[in-house]
Amino acid sequence: MLMFRQTQARKSILVKIPSLSSAFNVKMTCSYYGNVVNTVSYASKDMAFLLVEYSTENEIIKLKETIRYQSREYLCAVTPLYSYKDLPQTVKLRGGQLQKSYACSAFVAPTEKEMVKKLEETNSISEQMILLYNVLKLPDFNIRLRFYTAEQISFYLSRLFTNISVLPFGSSVNGFGQLGCDLDLLCQIDRVKQSKSDSLSFLTQTLSLNEKNEKKVFLETIGTLMKVFVPGVTNMRKILEARVPIIKFFNTYTNMQCDLSSSNVLASIMSQLLYTYAEFDWCVKPLVCTIRNWARNRSLTKDEPGQWITNFSLTLLIIFYLQTKYIVPCLGTLQDVARHNTSKLQAVNQQPKNEILYQLLYGFFEYYSIFDFKTQAICIQEGCPRQKKSYAPLYIYNPLESTLNVSRNVTTIQLTQLIDNFRNGLHIMLSVKEEDILMCLLNLKKTPEMCNNTPSIQISQKESLNQEMFTEQRNANIL
Ligand code: CTP
Ligand code: MG
Image: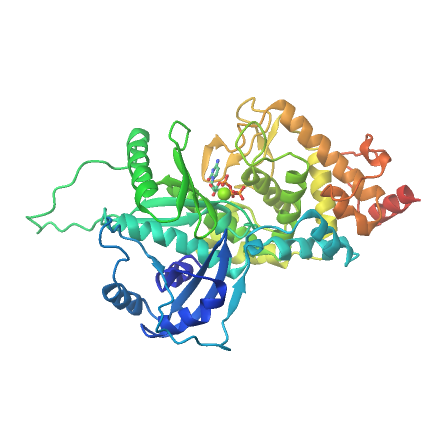
């Protein structure tokens, strides 16, 4: 997927156009330079753009050799962004078809009112969860723009350094991205091949990006360069003292909030791991989407980092729960499969998957309402709880680095609030009419008074509710 999207980005150019109505003219102009296979026009702030995909990278190489820089008197920084101007002699072409055109609103999630309207059209909670996921997931043009944004910086930096590439990671690529999510970017150093027979080579400075101070120097420098020279880069903020130093900026042309970090290979592998889990079963993405939105609308997660659980940790909690239900395998099994032993994976796949989404949502709330957070930790590697290694209130073993706790930022107060909300979620699911459950969970509809009190059901660790008891209990509560 990464390679496909990266190649697609390398075969594309982004053209700033006078207005959405000139998109067809621009497409025709672009066709002079090669075979255009796809176009998407969109508005961002008060500007309009056309993303043009050619059939091969060669056409882009030729195009770059042909076209000139806009200005003679200013510095012409290397940029893969193009500008189109209607010339007086240009014949206005009308009536042509463009593939798709998007307004600014296509970049953001629907308003609460629009969401309620959509959800009210379906009655079952499972259908509503799938609808929520479909409405919020990143559409194809948004993914194209994310990879183009990465390619733009990659291209810019490649003119300064010969062995650097910029890759998206995190929710833009792991299958859990939603409209408006940030674009996490990673600078990766491609090792330069050296031959023993090379007696003459270029002299280089010894900055390696493996050490924190060197990362800071690198990000500080390229941050300043990008702020001054890369078109569309605004609101640059350098957060260099954090555990993982990053530079934050907004790309006004592609409408993306970007976080650029340097050389963090594990984060990229983690994205691949989450992607694998997201693809494993159809129910993973709608379930994660619902729980992420539930947590956001109940202020359990926030945009800025702090003492609260992050979307990433929350996703690991969900994957772990799905492991306990044999919906997805534990990491150890995946590693076995990678070593060509597929028998175990088939065993997992053969488990009946008749649990529908609302049961899983209910099961998730139930599982963590009674989880022994005091002594037990979440372990994705083994797929079952493991002893905690520290007194951190919430302990999630980092699947790729077992000495680290992914959620060590979470305080006791935040964990208590989280557990209260799991219980409240469980209670809403037992006491509200099915068609209203999701809206109540997402705070889009007021929860009936009784649901804000302590759950009336007795939750016991041994005796978890089965489907029959679940329906019975809910009906009794509604009555
Ligand atoms: N990551 C990690 N270890 C952590 C935190 C983050 O490996 N302790 C990696 C994960 O691959 C994560 C990515 O960094 O997906 C980006 O982190 P973040 O932006 O916080 O999470 P996202 O998954 O991108 O979710 P969001 O939509 O909230 O940005
Ligand atoms: Mg992110």
